[in-house]
Each structure stands twice: as structure tokens, then as C-alpha cells.
Image 1 (cartoon, rainbow, N blue to C red):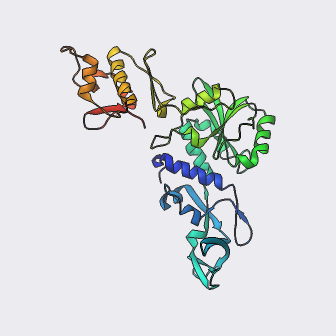
Image 2 (tube, rainbow, N blue to C red):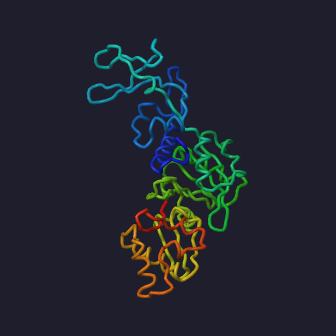
Image 3 (tube, rainbow, N blue to C red):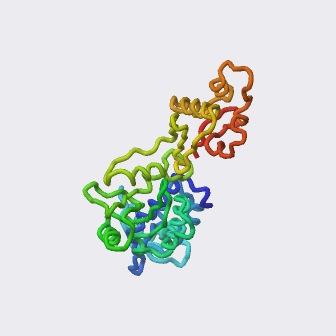
Length: 335
């Protein structure tokens, strides 16, 4: 699966797999494998076999399998069969030999470098800042993604896996290492209880809560991240609205592009955006072009553009924020 084709839902599933892989699965020889067995992967709705092949790697085979026993599933030992495509086990009910596909007991691990590189892309971290991706600070637990821009400043962004079970070790690093006093610690799991204060002026940000939830493709809510950095530690903030428009500053902010607010020039262009925003607040995603033109020009007969494109003539970025549906309707580009 191409990284560019990841949906928000599939990325969230991938991140959950990465988080849960902190818990080891023992193979037949007792070696601990940090990954997920095939029978767990098969339950994933957003990640197909093709997706898993692109984002994970097989690191071994589980030493046990969850076999049906009445209304429950119980762990049973499995062993290699003469057929390399299957493993065998003794049925806990009949004690007869049964077989399970090797794919179901194969243990897969999310490619950490590939996942962190993708997150760095989404956060806009420059290539020169990404050395920590291939050199974890705490093996299998903590990585420095790099410096990302938030508003007018740059902050260190980190990724932690299994924070709940590694809190002391992770926080000790941030308290003792020569690091900036402020930064972002993204977690692949949940945040910590309010009673647990983060080190220095760092903010703990679960990735699941930092992604724009209504977008089909993954986008970080940079506006929310900015507000988290400015707010006192432990503050509970609402996700950013999909669209915000400030009529006084003539600034449009779309959540998926919140790091690039659009300051609109020209009264006519402002009038178009203002009408679209009013309709969006009323639940209308798409607005007919003739209605927009009518709202902008009113009864005026001369000097009016006949097409929305003409109003934005000479503006090279308007289509990043306003989209057409191909049927003469326009609305905000939310992706």
C-alpha cells in the first residue's frame, strides 16, 4: 500500500498495532517476539493483507494458538508440520490433531522506521531533523521524530510506545537529558491520568486525538497542538472545528491545513468565503455557484463575474481552500 493512500482509519489501526506490539508473544523456543499474531491481524477492518504486507514484517511464529473449546478459546501449544503452510495442535475437546494456517500464527511487527517517517511527513519535519527515527533513544519505546513548526516556533516532537508501562524511564530521560524545556511527546496509546504531570513544559499528545477526525486522509490538527502548547499543563481542549472564518481579520482556517491560514484579499473574495462559511455553519457542504454569485453581487447587473473562478483570477491558492463538486456547486476543501 502506498503511504500516500493511507486513510485516517487505517493509520489509526496501524498505530494501535504498533502500541499493542509492546507486549511480547513467545515463539516455540520461548523467545519473546514484539509483534501481533495473524489471528489478531485478521480482525482488522481497515487494514487489508496488502496493507499489512506493506507496513509490517514477519518476525517469527507464535508458540501457541487460541483454539476453540466450547464457548471459549484457550491457548494450546502448536508445532511445525511437514507441510510448511500449516502448524498442528491437539484439539482441547477431542484431543485429535488439528491444523492451523501458518499465516494465522505468524507474528508481524509494524516497521517502526517506516511508520515514524510517515508521521514525520505529516508533521512537516525536515529531512535533516530526522536522525532520531533510525536511532531510538530508548530501544523499542522512545524516538525523537525531529523539530516541527508550530505557528512561529519550532518544537521537538517525540514518539513513545507503551507509555503506561514505561512512564518512569521515559520521564527520567526528559528530566535529566540536556533538552529544550518545551516539546511534544506523541503517544501511540492513551494519555496519562491527570495526576501524572509531564516533565518540564512537555505536552503528552495521543496521536488518535491529534488527528483531524473527519478527514479521510490523515492530517494532524496543528491548531489543536498549538493550543495545547499555550494552555496550562493538563488542560482539556476541544478538537478544532473543521472550518473557522474570522470576518474581522478576513482569515480562513481549515483544520486539515491549520498550519496555513488563508488571509483573504479583496472584498469580493471575502464575500464568497463569508457566504460559504454561513452555509457551512447551517449544515450545507455544497452551495450552487449561482447562489454564491447572487449573495456576493445582489441585484447588481454590471461589473459582476459570471463564474466563481473569475472572482479568484490571479489567486494561485484559492483552490487549496475551496473545491467544486463537478456539478456547479462549491464548498470548502476539507481534505
